[in-house]
Length: 154
Image 1 (spheres, rainbow, N blue to C red):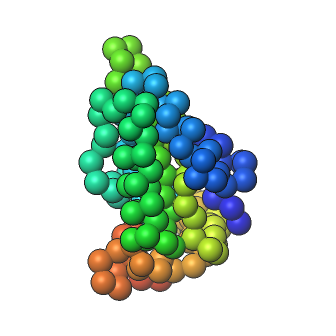
Image 2: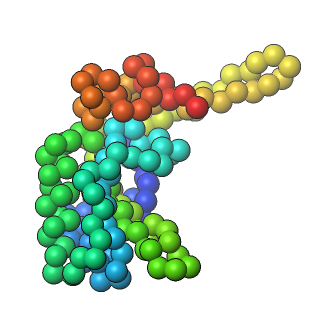
């Protein structure tokens, strides 16, 4: 199951040249650029771990600064989801203007929705990660998100 989050998520994975082009586009629009990573791409997991600090006030010719950080993050976490985010801080906007995944694990397991009926006709839903978090992105053997069985609890 291919996780689809952010801009361009339905396209094939970008090459480094295509990633560089998107970074140059973001910088040319005066957007700050940051890199985030996670081993849990749950749809409600808005806050991934930040890699380094956001890059502000870069010039277009400095796109390689961001690309070096992308490569370093890929090297540190080869089995993590890594995304680049461009933030538009202009008055009236102040929002993420661009976000796209630049790295994925070799195997993406996805999620499953479990439905259970409880007393008094109450229906409960639970989103279950189909594979336990690998812990490759967490500290030691503990995953960043979820519990050791891989069940995401709300």
